[in-house]
Structure formats: C-alpha cells, structure tokens
Image (tube, rainbow over the protein chains, first blue to last red):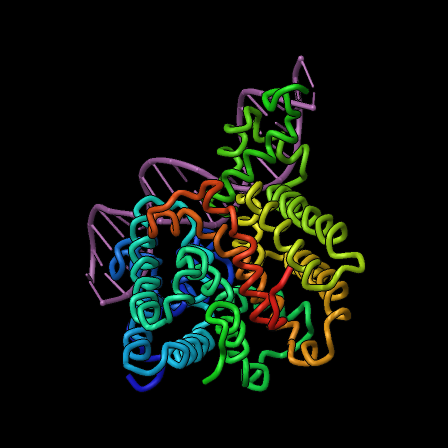
Length: 205
Length: 205
DNA sequence: GTCTATAGTCCGATAGAC
DNA sequence: GTCTATCGGACTATAGAC
C-alpha cells in the first residue's frame, strides 16, 4: 500500500480508465486498452465494477463527491457572500488543477444520451448548483438577487470554470504557453473578478 | 430541391450525422446508424466524405465557417469596442440557438486525441480567438488591456457562451424550464453584461 | 480474486456490380 | 452515384478453471 504500483486492481483499473477516457473519450476506449494499462484481465472490470458503464459512473461519482465536499466546507459560514464565493472559486480551480482528467470526462461525457445515465447526471448537477445557490443567493442584496437568473448565471459560471481544463491541450497549442504554476498564480482570482464584477457588480475581498 | 427530403445524399448524410453525433457522440455512433437515418447505404459515406473521420471534420468545418463569417461581419468597424462586442455576442448566441447540435459536437469532440484532428482543431481555435482579439483588443483603453490575459479571458468567454448549449438537456431537467423564446429574450444581453462588467468594467450599449 | 477462452455483435472500409 | 456483400478486426460481456 506504499506506492501506486501496489494499489488494488480496482484502483488501478479506475486510474487507467480516467487517463484513457480523458484522452480518447469513453466510447472510443476499449476495455482491452484499460486492462492492459492496469495490468489485469478484461474480466476484472466486470468483476469489480459490473460493466464498462458502471465504471464511468464510478468515475463521475468521484468527481461530484469532490465538488460536494468543497461546497459544504467552504460555502457555509457568515462571511460576506463575495468572500465565500471567491474562496469557493479558488478551491474549485485548485481541485480542477489536481484532477484535470476528471473535469474533461465529466464535461464531455455528461451530455451524451446513454440510457440510465440521464437521470444520474441530472440529479448530480441539480445538487451541485443547488448547494451554491442556497448558500450564496440568500446573502446577496435584494437588488442584485432580482437581476440574477440562476439558470443563466449558474451554467455560465460552470462553463467559465471548466472550459480551460476541457480545452487545455488545444489552448496550449494555440497560445504556445506552458500551464505552469506561474500561469495559475492569479488564475482563480482573474475568473473570480470577472464573475464578481459581472454578476455581483463588486469584486473586493 | 424544394424540401429537405429532396436534399442530396451527401447533405442527408451530414444532417443525420450531426443529429447523432450530438446525441450520442462521434465514437458511439456507427456508420450504419447514420446511413439508416439518411436513407442511403454505408458505401455512400466513404464515397462522399472519404471516411467517418472526414465526415466529422466536414461538420466541424461548417461550425467554424459560421463563426468566422459572424466575426468578420460584426467585429469590424469604428463603433466602440463594447458595442461591437455586444453585437457579436448577440449574433453568436443567435447562431448557437439555430444550431445547438453543432455546438455540442464542436465542444465535446474537439478535445479528443484523434490523430490528425489535433492540428486541425488547434488551427481553427487559434484563428477564431485571433479574429476577436485583433478587432477588439486594440480599441480598448490601455489600463483595461494591460489587465487582460487573453489566454485566460478568451477560453472563459467561450466556456460561458457554449456551456448552456452543451448541457441544455441536463439544465432543462434540473431547473424544469422550457428553453422557449421567452427564456432567450434577454439571454445574450445577460451574458454580455457579465462579460462587459467583468472584463471591461463597463457595460453600456 | 484473478485468469483464459470464447460467444455474439458491431465496427469501418472496400470490391465489384449496376 | 448508388447498391449489396463481405473482409478482418474490435467490441463488451461471461462462463468456467484455478
């Protein structure tokens, strides 16, 4: 249990699948490719996860569990909503940086019409946006709140946050830059500024 | 040539492929499914497009050609940059509304590592963001411009604009709303406000 | 828990007739 | 331009041995 090489077969399958799904998409990745990278046999996927689709659901679940956790830790409290929102965006960006593959998979695979996945994903997205809305909206002044359509602002924010990680290879190629820690030093705050000034019309903290 | 039923086989293949790629993704859609919907035989895809991948490239091309056209028509001129930018966002949203399937395909398929597609997509994205930047940035006041990192603001804007169309079925399910013309009446301006106040720190026009 | 072997289906591409 | 037939391979899932 000391190194990743000792990780359980189940864990190794999931790690390999995350890498491959992010790189080539869920449906373009074969089970053979996943188990080869994980060093196990095809039968292990169905033994440990039940099916290829259940493996994808387990991966998406990991992504959303992380989001819920951050939301519940950071959005609560009595600090001004702008401050809590800014901390939240920093935490989200930090989490995305650590797991860009999960972001890619969540964004590219969620919209697809796979039977049984539709309800699954709607439930998770609802819960996610609901957490943010319930903690932040009530603390905003009336005149700001009445001009916000949550069903417009929510998806816009998520798009703003995720698109960079979704398209990172393309953006990197297009701008010829390295996404090192210098790039990310003020990244979350630049996005937070856009959102704060754009939606709340104020950006301090 | 009067109705869509009379459209050429090539056109019918492309229309069917757009619907299916948007619904199920490129790699989850088989040629047999496409040609069945188009009322032709499998051989016609390779005859008219060369390969399944070339069909996808033709679809992505249609999407980007539309974007270039809008950019060149609307971004040019001597009006204040805020005004041109707002008109541009309105036009983009209008175009996306007419072809939500194309947006879905472009966003979900662009990041995938398909050999030969990588250079293709990087070239198009570069050209797209370059058009916007070259028409708008020079007209902005120095103190605004120096605080903008194009490689941050560009993708954030694209994410904000596309995410709604990418996730429309999920959002619809989550918020239990209809995306009718009432929903879209002020939609583009709400996004434009976020962008204007967020990035330019002013939102008139 | 892990394997091998295989069942049964579907894939993209093309040859060749019309 | 359009078709049918078919090739060779890859797919997911599972049965059964250890």
